[in-house]
Length: 451
Ligand code: 9WN
Image (cartoon, rainbow, N blue to C red; front, top):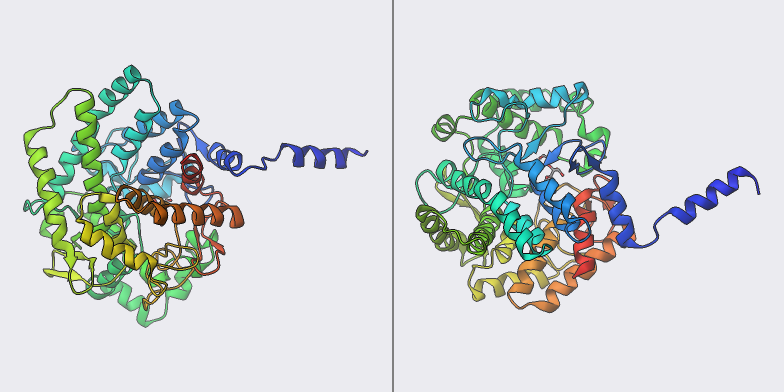
């Protein structure tokens, strides 16, 4: 046999055949200096909720690496408590990305670690507890003791800076904080109330086609699977305005920047608070009284986002004093919070099952099928994502909807098996889109396979 064929044989033999092994391979290939990048090329840095999902997967077979993933994330924590949504990779190649944010302009940013200046869904406590469950009792206690002060500081920051009027819900200032970047409630708000003059000029002169040529993301993913250039400019413009204020909360709160109580983010925060209470109890600590009060307040205030007419939770726009009545997957994350009423949970489940809404062949679409926004491959405006499936399935199971949770788990695994470890998928025909060999898809596949 010639060498050429021997090599081919070897390759086939060494290639993992089983989904679990393939998922581990994705996480191994995306490992870089103590953390896991979401995907080669498009996402070369560390992201907050991505690393939490990654740690949840890793905990099943490499608990030390799972801990390291979280500890690496905490190296980026600001002295005011904020955990930033991104920690930038070192090196000349990434200088431009770091300079885009210039986190060093804030007195709270850590020395020697370049980060973004906003946060992302607070999944840290979930990841910490999932890791804890894999450890023997004494190691679990030590692990919780180590991360507890960071978590308390982070949750206190969310209340102090992001709920300045003590309304119970935290507000977000940039769509990237939702993790559901281009979700319709946010994009509609940006288009309506935050179109800067220069973006308007770009639109009028149809310069977006020129700008499209220098976009970084569309070098890796077809433009139809990402934000339109005009929408991307709106998002970028907000970043520019935040940077201009050196991320000062006092300045941001006084400004006209978006301020939105996001249904998805607050649902994840409620669950994180529950986990934090559990962690405190396990190590015999008592949460600060003010935090305990805030936590109770949030659970009650969350129900104010509910619309009886639409049978769902809507984001609330603090600037206009009105709810943003545009359906999107954030509403279903309420199930993950574990604190909504059984009646409201049932109403959401009805929508998950309804083929006109979220009950597509490959659920759960990021906007309902009958929404005017729906496009099956457009980033957060239609496709199915494995992370939102995982969060919703977890919530459904805790509410006793075992069959519905199992259905989401099974269809998620089928998607990955059929199409590969992609970032997102068409909810109609399962075709893949976005980045390939995407870490949280692999990590949550590992978790689903272990359930
Ligand atoms: C901006 C990394 C991140 C995810 C987000 C997802 C996307 C970034 C981008 O990728 O956002 O933060 O470049 O669009 O929307 O949820 O954390 O995977």
